[in-house]
Image 1 (cartoon, helix red, strand yellow):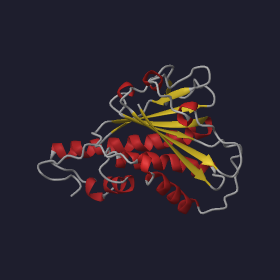
Image 2 (tube, rainbow, N blue to C red; image 1 turned 90 degrees about the vertical axis):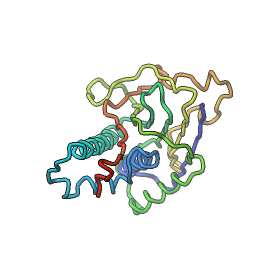
Image 3 (tube, rainbow, N blue to C red; image 1 turned 135 degrees about the vertical axis):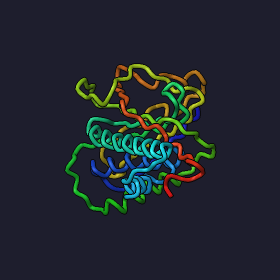
Image 4 (spheres, one colour; image 1 turned 60 degrees about the vertical axis):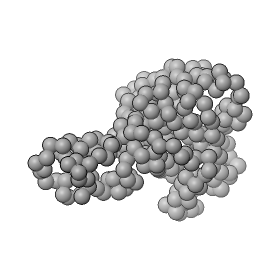
Length: 248
């Protein structure tokens, strides 16, 4: 399994809201970059809200294609909401692309700084800063992938500080392995303002050479509380209908 650690050092103390938007933005970027949606999320959303889709169309295939696109959009919105709702209870978020968790093609792990105060004074422009941090991430050479990823599923996993039994949106994972062909990218979001940060796992700092160790269980039940979102995104295959695009 190929492991690619990426350290993102922030020169400020991020707010809870900033980190939520950052994780959501990374999800949207990956969905477009890995060809699971045909446009950037903002454009995808704008097309789906276009008035011309309000009217009825006589073509069943077109109506079905629009319906599938809308379902993909709604699932993405649901994942964004879960990220927002679970942020305060979680220390790690993971996006996995593949038909199933056990056959994952790509894994993107995001480790967060420890948030010891939600009422952080904002001393920066969040919109501009978010754009700059995202640019720092997406232009990182270790995140560049040349191979094409076919239409597949995107799953959300998260590691909570404490277990839960009340959240119907999540199901607990007690054992899980990344297969040896999966490419793993670890984004360590690190606060550089000298307050406590979430420490990277040993496997990220010093990846073991042994192939068997690389394929170890990702979850340690003694210290981890891993959950999978019941909602996942199925990539939208933007095919032509009767030689025409549904967006025209």
